[in-house]
Image (cartoon, rainbow, N blue to C red; front, side, top):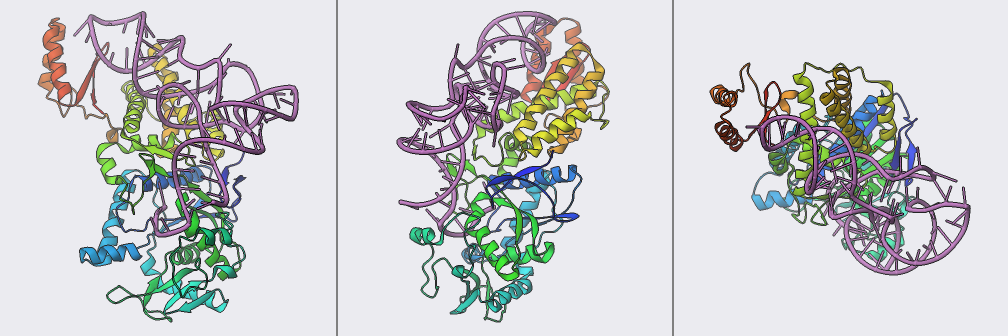
Length: 464
RNA sequence: GGCGGCAUAGCCAAGUAGCUAAGGCGGCGGUCUGCAAAACCGCUAUUCAUGGGUGCAAGUCCCAUUGCCGCCUCCA
């Protein structure tokens, strides 16, 4: 049984065989021209799940995720807002980390910035000059796509088809309209760096090649990103890197599908998006994660608040089982049965079939509740442990105090609701003064809490 | 126009040739309960966009049609 992943380069599900002792992974990070949106969340939850699973399988990893902190759009904004481009980049990077941490996304080992690798970028461009792939035109440096035989191998595009479509920027000094900039000469007032070709800044794609190879070597195991990056970004990265080194750049290209908002791709340029922060203000990270993982990462997914509500209800059911089990004194023991590991691996090995794992999780929850009704504590304990195993493996937050429905309790009631009120209700119930008891329950519900009477006690939950 | 992908119940969504088509949400009926809620039990696709074809056997492979989506311009 081996991990198989869809490799965009071959278009097939391939068995993952690492090239060395340490698995190297480059995650295409954000161009920090704006705050992260929900589409970014999906991409980074996907990479998080892969990282967690590789670690679960026992691999040692080195993960690099970049920030592209200089590009046309950032400069455009800096001019519009009359602020330094570095401040805009910094704000968006900070927001990215706020979101990622909240979402429990595993941190990469290092987050390099394009502007701090100008030297490496220049060296790479120089190498391309030396090998005859680059040329200078009015201060700009371009990569000559015709010189690179394999151009189009990732996106499965033919040069002639691309020219026919010809929506590329027309620049007379380009030899071929598809040639892309390695270095752009700066215009008056724009930020710039010094280079052998004059003052300017790196083109969009070169920073990823430079940083990936600087930290991970000439051939890396994984390169991840959204499928909108396949062309031209990743195609160009391959061209630059392989032209410079003569070696394969990436062994497994993994791309996640887009998140659509009302039928249309979420996109920064069209302002058609919901920021990650906005969503996190409305929904618990686990609800968002469940929503993502219920779809396969390679299928386009629709963003809709109704779907989030749906997943919130489903998620609350999981929490309910966990806390009911905990109320009986059951705790995590990490003694998961072998067949549970095997079933989990079978699903994950099949191109990270998280929807299948979610289905297993819910079957476990159902069995767990069944055992709870039967008062079969040993089974409840097993199911509790299995559920936590699935949740932890997929990166859900499982600490009790971080749960959506969690209410801090005291010996007599709750920190958040006056003990006297709860006592009054119990008193009323004992005297069979149900009208009063129900009125109190209703009042507490209006405050955002749910009271559930069970045989021996009243459970307090936060409304979702 | 070129390239690629997808069409499975009211909604979301697994399934990549072979027992009765996972799972979630919602809905309906029942059990339990002072009531409510939760939970449990049962029901909710004789059928997988349409039309052909290849197999003993097809959501699952091939062809065509229709409809959506992505990329070809900055994008995860």
